[in-house]
Structure formats: structure tokens, C-alpha cells
Length: 90
Image 1 (cartoon, rainbow, N blue to C red):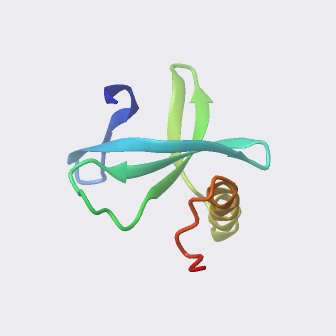
Image 2 (cartoon, rainbow, N blue to C red; image 1 turned 90 degrees about the horizontal axis):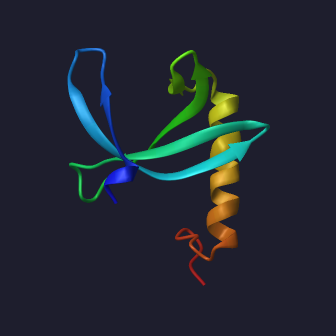
């Protein structure tokens, strides 16, 4: 499981570890869904776009609400397809 753990440094210089729980493609771009390793019951995930620079892959914060909504819709569709839609109380 260690291969899915990455460290991110916030704007205050604080380093935190995150687990990549899923990567997905939406509108021709690749995205990573991350949850904090330290928080056992994390309620929110972070979404980053995976871009390339001269050194390889980099994580870029989403730039718009539309981009965020698109990724969330694709994520929800994947979860529903896999039968993991926890919002659906049948």
C-alpha cells in the first residue's frame, strides 16, 4: 500500500501524507483523488489534476467549480457502476 502514499507540502510549509485512493479520467484529463493518511475517518477527499512538467507528473489544484463538478460526476458514476454508491439507500 505504500506505493499509493504521497507527501504534499501546504502553503505554510507543513508536510502531510495522503493516500491516492483513485485516479480517473474526465474530459481528456487525468485526476487523482486523495485522502489524508492521518485521519482514519476522513470525510472529505482532495481532487487534483495530474499534469506533466519537465520532471514528470505533478498535482495541480482544480481551477474552477466546473472542473470540480465534472470530476465529482465521473467519480460518482464510477462508484455507482462498482456498486459503491453509499448515498443510495435501497
